Image 1: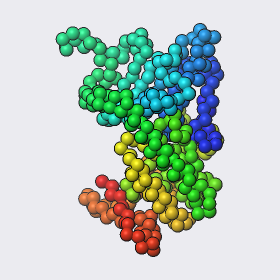
Image 2: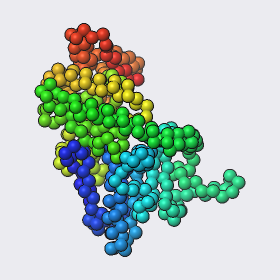
Image 3: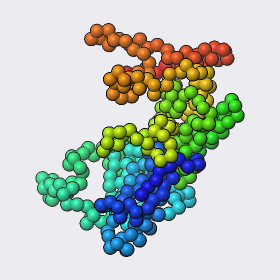
Image 4: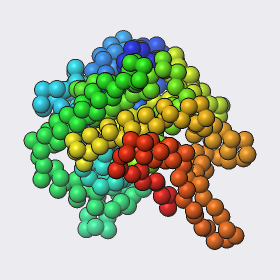
Length: 369
């Protein structure tokens, strides 16, 4: 069983008991994630494998492991090459790892839709997945789930593999981790006017994880805005960071439940994913925008209407999702859509503050097409 908790500065603290989980459920296999969605930490695949090995030997079972390396597949191997890898093996070096998936379009530098699954051996691949075709001048198997796929993804990926090579990918990952470390240290050291830290870090640190910064506004500050409010304010400077509320809709009950065992679903956090195109200068620009946004949000006092209250009000009126909530006001004129983009409360406040400081910089409102 996996218990997911907020503990200390680590967002995901995993306590995995393969024996308890596999004994209580009809388990076909286990999945470990090499870089989770929320903060980029790697699941301890090596520990999971050790427990599965013991369980299989004791029970006479044949439970295997699938490694979901959609993000970490192009990060973890090159960290290992540079001597900054995980605490243990995460791939076919482990006897119970039967398959590994990776996405070339995330950190592999390929185009969207590029991804694959590698099986340890042919017998692990069910025959009904393959479609045999003969019209290409012989008999060949297609392993794609929907049979026909464009070849542009594999072409681009193969070119990048040849062009960059192992050394190129290792340098790329090293640059990403250095840029991530800069942002992480900036966020860790940013102070509130009362002297306390602005943020609480929630990721795994500078090594052995994805190039991701995960944090949340310091709950001890008792702020009247949250991480999602900060996300929307940052978007007006054309920066997008992912903001989350830590709850999920249970597909069995359709009830909204807590995602973690020790914080409520109303808790929020944010993450910054550092891709290879985020240079040091861009990271410095993002850091500057974060600092300015927080100063403005502080000055909005308790009159600031959070995006959550807007969403709730919309739902009360029959709305469906966050996508229905406009960031900027707009108008409809009959069948013709006419938009009057007006400055938000945030933009007005920021411009007022800039005028007071006699700043020559200006804010650019976000236009939604």
